[in-house]
Amino acid sequence: MTSRSDIHFQRGVSLFDFQLQFGSENQCRKHLFQLKWPKGYSCPKCDNRQYYFTQSRNLYQCRNCRHQASLLAGTIFSSTKLPLTTWFLAIYLVSQSKEGCSALKLRRFLGISQTASMRLKHKLQMVMKLADDKRPLRGFVQIDDVYWGGKRPGGKRGRGAEGKTPFVAALQRDPKGHPTFIRFSRVESFSSSEMLRWGQKHLKPSTIVVSDGLACFKSFQDIGHFHYSVITSGRYNSPDFMVFDWLNTIIGNMKNKIKGTYHGIEQ
Ligand SMILES: [Zn+2]
Image 1 (cartoon, protein in one colour):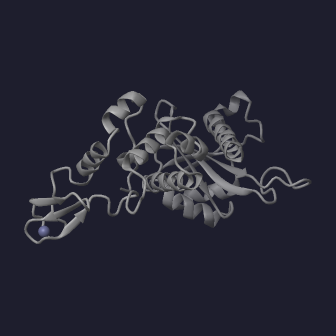
Image 2 (cartoon, rainbow, N blue to C red; image 1 turned 180 degrees about the vertical axis):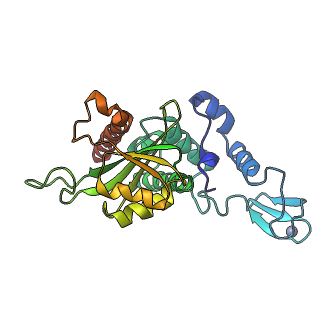
Image 3 (cartoon, rainbow, N blue to C red; image 1 turned 120 degrees about the vertical axis):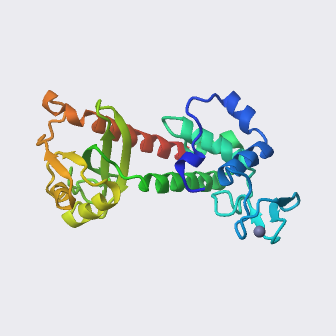
């Protein structure tokens, strides 16, 4: 199970309805079976469609070649000790909340240990990131450099501040200007070569990129994108620079969220 859509439940489903649909191991297994074999079981070795189900080991044995297939092999649920109902509920909690769900909240809600909760959340985040990375941004994309963490007394402020971790923040907008996808990527630095590498991985060809003019972003033009600079001189609040509104709001929200989650774990 490596796709975000696979683990993403329909937004807006109430917890009550969710539990009706996925409240038992059987229901969760049925759902996974549908995702893995949407046209019915098919033996991975010989394509035969007839099988025996061995209840004790949860294996599907081919009636033709006797190959045993596992429903959970190759998914984030393989070798887990947690019930599928716990995983499904965790996915629901992480994917339904706009604010996200801290490992501490997950632990309390699911009644599992802090270690299990952190491991579970980390796995879910990895799967979501892998799926996101497979889908390059396209169309109209705003981009900015962000620095997180590493507060040091007396350190430099702003770009390149010591000890801070550089991130690319990129926001894809639809033709009506609404934000559709956001991507935060940790980068080594804001050098032109690093931005070329980032652009090749995260942008579809011929994307229109708008930045605030940081020199390295101009390298997107070298790989076939259209790059426009809007020189803000830090005056993001000016009406002339409303183009960065959404991106700045989202960066602010993300910083608060990280702060909130961190405090949550500290409690
Ligand atoms: Zn077979």
